[in-house]
Image (cartoon, rainbow, N blue to C red; front, side, top):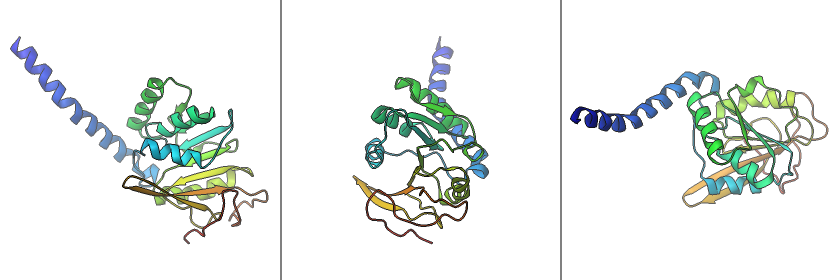
Length: 208
């Protein structure tokens, strides 16, 4: 009996370490694909504030590129009734997102795929929270894929040498984030995109 109890205690104590090692290993494996972006959480209240910036209609297609644990997908689905789809290549984050979506009643979808290799032409709204290296890779893809009217929400990082964004600063507790809002104009050249006004209010020039 003592050995069973001891084994159980060891297993309980070791479980968090195993999870951490799994996460670290999964993150290191995909770093070359993610442009140094890692699995990061965004506070739920901040997610709600971000989504409130871009009202959506039920049935619209909302994509989260590098969706992490699926928090933004779940919130967008609940708030607007959109068709929420996330892409994730970190197996740890992907499995967590599947579990998280199931736990919150489903409705959203997460796919274990590299978002650089998927067609985004049917997107109505795209959300991304990617490090600077990854977000710059997306610029050319957005020029190729996105149709006029598509809205892109970039958390924290501006997309350099692309459209002129509306910049909204959100503060929640000690957390302050710049949110960059872009909308593809009706006359959208393949590359580079032409800076212009967006429907979110006064635009703020992005960094070059």
